[in-house]
Image (cartoon, rainbow, N blue to C red; front, top):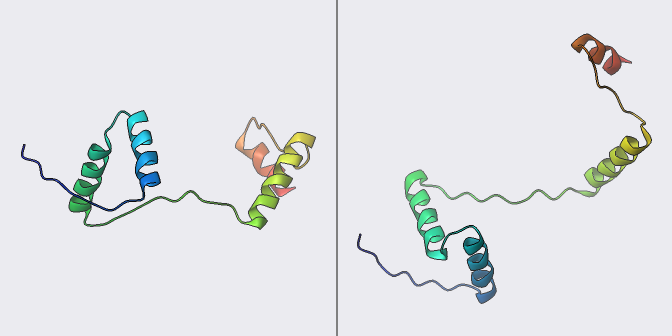
Length: 91
């Protein structure tokens, strides 16, 4: 297979961190970039996932749920039947 060189400007820290992660996964950075470019060609789209960061309200709800779990408050189940679960949810 013929190859071609691609030169891009990139923050050295980004390159270094990406290279380390690629190596940890068993890939070269070149292989990762090639796969990304092939995916661009195949899908004609670019997609990235960004970890969801909970807002203040969700963080508070998570803290409350953890406290409830530890104290046994607002805890239901386990249930033997669906009917038992539905009764608990209605009460």
